[in-house]
Every structure is written in structure tokens, then in C-alpha cells.
Amino acid sequence: MSLYFEEESDIRLSIDCEKTAREVIDAALDYENFPYEAEVEILLTDNEAIQELNREYRDIDRPTDVLSFPMISYDKAGDFSILESEEDCFNPETGEAVLGNIVISKEKVLAQAQEYGHSVLREYAFLIAHSMLHLMGYDHMEEEERLVMEAKQKEILEKLGISR
Image (tube, rainbow, N blue to C red; front, side):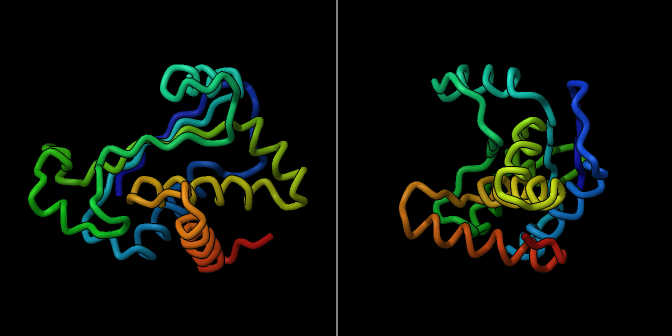
């Protein structure tokens, strides 16, 4: 798995962000039985930058905790058979499936950890697990989809020993 990790802004989280990202990404890929090596990009930023991305890509003029930019369109969430016939889903230099980008607001991680009464580690790991599921085709627009994603997120974090 290749992780392209970038951190901007002076805000710091009290955890090893890159190491944690690798662990959560690997756990999510294993949990979903993703059949290929994968490439993921993560940007840690602040509320101002994520608000700008929200405005540009989603017509939402406010900061959110996380944004996911999947590079693959799935017919069915978690069904990776489509990749067999989609050569453009793979990085020609590495052969890895290019899953997409994750952008996280460090300010939101800190605020939500405090608001929900759990650790910064748990909040950060949760956001990555959530985004990884988006990058593998899952969504939460419908109630049934939301319940599926919540269960998967919880199980991924439990496998890592990260709980509320």
C-alpha cells in the first residue's frame, strides 16, 4: 500500500498521524478483502482550507470534518470485480489501484474528540475508516446504507483496538 501523506497548518494532533493512517487504511482494506495493492492520498489541513474545498467541489460553504474523493466508481459498494476490466484505475508505474484522496480538518478532529468525549486517536481513526469506505464505494445517503457503514466503521476500529 502506498500512502501519500501531507500535513499543512500549524495545528498539531497529539498522535502519530501518518502511522495511524497507515494502520487504519490497511485494516479497512483487509476488512473489505480488497484484492489489490492500493494507493491513497491523505491531506491534513485546517477548517479554512477544507471549507474552500467544500465550496469548490460540493457547493457547501462551511468546513466539514472530512472529505473523500474516490477515484473509482463502483456498481456495487465493496464489489471490486469491476477493477478487473478497468486498467485506468491502476497507477501504471506501481500497479496499485488508485483509490482516491482523503482530506481531514485537524481543527474538527480536536473539536469532535472533545465534543464526543473520546480520544483524538479515536476521532482521527474513525474519519479515516469512514473515508476508506467511501473510497471503496460505500455511502450513507439512505438509512440502510448509513447502518451498513456504521457497522463496518465500528468493526474496523475494533480490530485495531480503538474504541470510544
